[in-house]
Structures are given as C-alpha cells and as structure tokens.
Image (cartoon, rainbow, N blue to C red):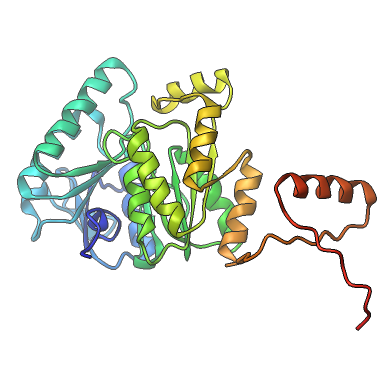
Amino acid sequence: MGPHYLSKLFNPQSVAVFGASDRLESVGANALQNLLKAGYQGALYPINPKHDTVQNQACYKNIADLPEIPELAVIATPMPSILSIIQACGEKGVSNAVILSAGFEDDVGKRLQQKITAIAHSYGMRLLGPNCLGILRPKIGLNATFSKNQASAGNLALVSQSGALCTAVLDWAEANDVGFSLVASTGDAADIDFGEILDYLASDAETHSILLYIEGVTDARRFMSGLKAAARMKPVILLKSGRMPEGNLAAMSHTGAIVGGDDVFDSAIERAGAIRVLTISQLFAAAKTLSDNITIKNNRLAILTNGGGPGVMATDRAAELGLKLPQPSSKSY
C-alpha cells in the first residue's frame, strides 16, 4: 500500500503560514510562533505582503515568491482574503490547507465557504476547517495551531470539532504526562471530516488509540466507514454532545453540525465497535488509561473496596456489562 492521501496534510515536509506577523495576539502570529517553538522539522515559509521579516524569519510577499511548493498551507488571514489565497495555492499545486480563520457563520459566510471549497476541489486541494484550532503532529514538531499549548509525542490521537475542547485536553495532558500522535480540530468541516481522518488513523503506525469529540456528523456513511475501519484496528473512545434537544440546538449554532437522534447514534456506535463516554472526566480517564498502554485481554474483574455499598454498586454495574467476577481463592500464599 502507498501512503494515505492525507499523509501530506498530517506529515508535511514544508509549511507556508499566511497571515504570519509579529503581533502576538493575532492568530497568524501564534501559529508561526507555535511552529517555531515546537521545532518543526520541515521548511517553514511565513507569508505576509506587508513584511520582509517576521519573528526573525524571512517573510515572503505571496506564494509565488516561495522557493518551493509547500505541502501544507496554514491560513490565518481575514475571511474576505481566503478565496484569493486558495485560488493562488491551487494554481501553484498546494495539496492541503488548514483554514484557522473564523467568520463563516452567517449566510454570506456559508456561501463564501462553499465557493472556497469548490475552488479547492477544482485543483484537487483538500481543506481542514475553517474555524478550527489546527493540527499538531508532535513527533515532527508540527504545531499548526493558534493555541497556547504544546504537546509531547505519544500514541494517542485526538480529533475534535471543538477547538476549546482540544485546548482543555491539551492542558490536562501536559499536567498528566500524556502524549499525542496527532491532534486535529475539524471546526466547521467544509471538506475533511471525521470519516476521512479516522480512515487515516486506522492505518497510522504512530497511533495506537483514538479519542473523538463529536457534536454532529455531516456525512454519516463516510463517518461510519471510517469509524468501523479504525475501531477494528485500535480502541476508539468518543464523547458526543447534543444528547438533549437543547444541546442539539447549541451544537447546530456552534459548528452547523447535523445532529441526529441520540438513540440512533448510540446504536450506530455500538455496531461500529467504538466506546462512548458521557462526560469530559470519563474522556480524561480513558485518555490516561490508553496512554499507559494498559491492555485488557479478558473480561474478568476484581473489585477491591473499603466500603460495602460502593462494592455492591460496582458489582451490579459489572454484571450489567457482562464482566465476570471470579471468586478469590481461599488458599494462602
């Protein structure tokens, strides 16, 4: 098998940052600073027509001035400029772009997003975002985000529709010594969504387990195909919001995600072989367990407790889940 078609998105050998600047409160400045701090191992090209140098790096006026065609474009410019940037990237043969910029929520923004996606596809370019935190691939020093976080290398992948959830997990991971193979924020998912990222992660040798935060699914068939492929190969733990009608409305207003019936989603997840958690605390617990490479080969469970009531409740729940509770031997050793 050859490389996955998303390999250059997640393992680029060169990155161009549109909107790079010295204004450290700006998205573009943070994205460039993160790449420099993380020690990105490829070629890095800041692009800003107003500057000759940015953060002590040579800065280029436009993509036509670059000495090579970058494998990834990171775009952090105002929304109205993105259409022309995608056009220029497509003409030069850039294969992937991450759009960090927001502002596509209203009808005008949605129409512009559709135009941007159509132009990208006409050149065979794939898009992550817009309105996303970006991507991290710690093993190669790729931190193409505007987060304040860095991440250590590990074998756990995180894919989330929410950038804020990503930063919360990264904050927690830093304090708990948890590393990542990949962190990807899908944002509004105008193009690349969970299904294709899961398909990539299923065969990614660096990824041993996967965490998902989902608000809604735009392409159910592709999502289920990717989820089944990944869950057959490695543990997949997911947290889905929008379980209640009020949450559905909130999710739609956040990313415009299509939110279906929660009972239907539960059934689909069970068939795919993934495991659903209901709280962020459970997601953190799963992340810690998976990062420690704890492998359970059988369905037997021993419960050790200093209180009778919690032990009884734990026993009830274990029985409901079909776990076997073996009787300890009376033999002394």
